Image (cartoon, rainbow, N blue to C red; front, side):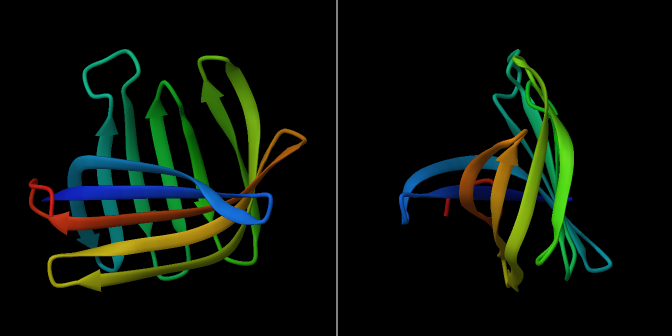
Length: 142
């Protein structure tokens, strides 16, 4: 595993504009398993709210596995609707996504995974999301 610095940006489309953005900076690990890229990182490490996240990206899809205060396993595949159960401190619910697009690119010392999707929680439509996971080798912020 290669130590990496991650910048995760989630943007939400509301009222026709990309205006709600959440950005995280985390330290994690990267591994290339014969073309499947695996990123691991922890949020709120060492607290009761700790969440361990694994991102597995192949050429055609990306799967996000989260364990901890928030837990789910969701696959994002362009042109498909997929679902999973999400476990939160408030209870369990159904999450469905319809993936619009997905791409991944490698660079000399890092890379990026970018995808967008429509999110439904139970019967409620939550909106369109775009998620960008960018990493740079090393633990220092670029």
